[in-house]
Image (cartoon, rainbow, N blue to C red; front, side):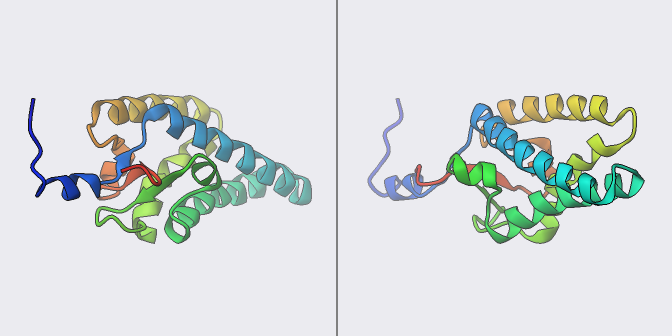
Length: 153
């Protein structure tokens, strides 16, 4: 088809490989187990009332945003060899990470939150699958963050 010259080969080889949807969902599943355990412990300590809902929601957002900013990955992403990168190829900024993960708060809305969260997940999944860089709408809203495979070039 297309020939790649030796001049272009290093540039192509240095590009991070986008992570596909199944491995991203698996990483999120691991993170859900970690967060659920932390949230349960928090509820046992302070009770499962409105204060638990608010603190738990803040904890969920902080878990994803801070780990993506500081380590470039959450526990689930680390286990499965994924990283979040910013538009410049480095770790995302705190602002980018907060914008990228703000959707996690939707599930905390009493009564309708879980249903709305499912709708958002389906939407994001569709946008991830249709984008050549595997960027979901949340990645696009965060200025172009991406989830990539570590060590794969």
